[in-house]
Amino acid sequence: MDSEWNPSKTKQAIARAFRPGQQKVVYVYQLLATGTLEEDKYRRTTWKEWVSCMIFSEAFVEDPSQWQAEKIEDDVLREMVEEDRVKSFHMIMKNEKASTG
Image (cartoon, rainbow, N blue to C red; front, top):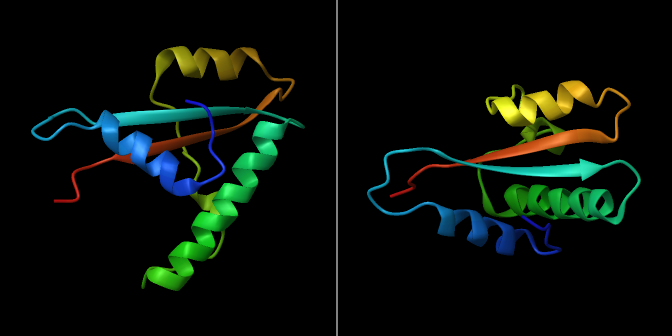
């Protein structure tokens, strides 16, 4: 999934992957390489999303970096990360899409 400048477009793309009545969880991964335009885009859109949450939501997240996945559940992705210890991939973001009713 290519990163977008507008966080709403990313949310919309994730929502399209989830179908009504679907039983399985949908995972979306964004792999970012250090020092690239994609990394800059991700930081800016994360900041936009954080500001939006602060303005339009009662929930407050102190640090947007806390939105990153804490553990990797995909075996192929885990192997990629374990192989690449020189930090060319430094951040993995996982979004779970659950039915919001």
